[in-house]
Image (cartoon, rainbow, N blue to C red; front, side, top):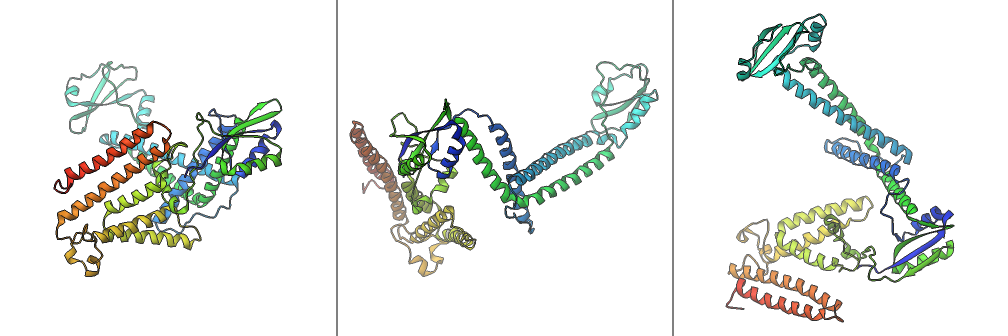
Length: 476
């Protein structure tokens, strides 16, 4: 359900802003109304946070890679303090930047090798020595058709060289002062010869390996980077809140939202700290944040909402219960096979056992998978669907679990299919009816109530029409 909220204004001494915010943070009950503008002091923290987040991501990849390779390296316990964690993070990020730069250099060298490989190995320094000695050597790579019409410029001698198919390689040798025609461009010489470029690539690869090893070694502090990230996030939020507090002479104030059930806790803290506090009921124009509080049995759907990025507005319906119910039913029907549902159940059970073995709570995602796989097994058992095997080849105790009206063992397969369609239409009608009934309750004092009643009647009418058209006009 969506927790009722109230808006509040907190008044403190301007000199006590930091201490007041720290006390509020310990209480953890107030959602502050922060300024959208960037506050002084945010940029350095944001930069440090970006670095630590990048290190956290890179170290996670390194730890995962080590596990895949069967290595013994594991993320260590967070023994580093904040400063040490940030120093290690900077080193990891710096190593990553060097690895990227070396990769770009290797890519450039490979392009140069591909471009000049048809010329054979030569040392560009020798050409420069010829220039210094008073002899100019220009290399050209042209299409055959164009090369056939190129005349040797005055002051140059032409040397035809071995050429790849469809191209013409030649050299012009002459005095450095001799000029080339404007439409004839000499080939730009590489800085290194082919073999020197290959050696440079090998050297850069060795540097990359060393840097990757450095990242892997520093990745043992993965958990420390995670804790450092959380501290920086809190520091950034604190800085944002501090900058959002408006000052009026010796006083400062900030607005926010508080769950109604925590109003007494905030009032008690305000009295103890000597703060001014005003708590008001919401107005229609207010747009408070949404706090969803559900019991554990319903909260298991939250990982799916988090994945979808779904969060209801404060004045919208909170549908966790209904969504969990219908999602679980439709998942079971779509997955539809008790055999594969059993495999999912096995995966969920193993995940739960591992969590318990570590002394942790079973994650909500695992709990959700247990529910979904359980319902899949139930539906697959009722329809006699086990790994897609024909019922005639299944053991008798499995076929005995089936419910004939929807089971694949039904002597009349069409009737079984129609019954499943009927069940689906009933589910759809129930979903739409729930939505209209909720709207009827909401609009009970408004003329909109009649519109919702009409829409509900329309759902019932369309339900019977669909049954008549899709399933059997003889029965409906």
